[in-house]
Length: 64
Image (cartoon, rainbow, N blue to C red; front, side, top):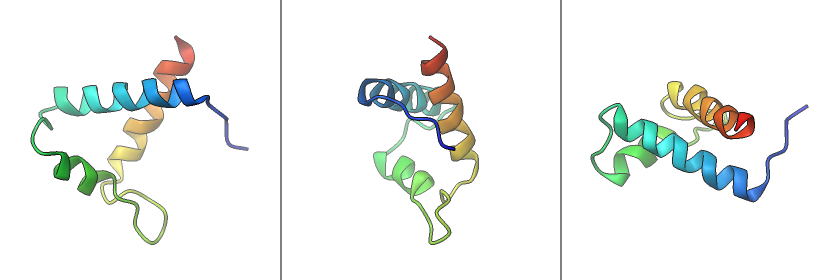
């Protein structure tokens, strides 16, 4: 079963995700981020590593 998060937690998780993306050198264009996280027909991001990064960001916010 999927864990539910609040809107506030989701917003905070988005910030954590983008902040870490930037820290890894992904501070270029927004188009680069959107390209990496675009969901493909199988429901997974174009860059599969981004899903783990998202889960890590959510976990960080949930444990705070």
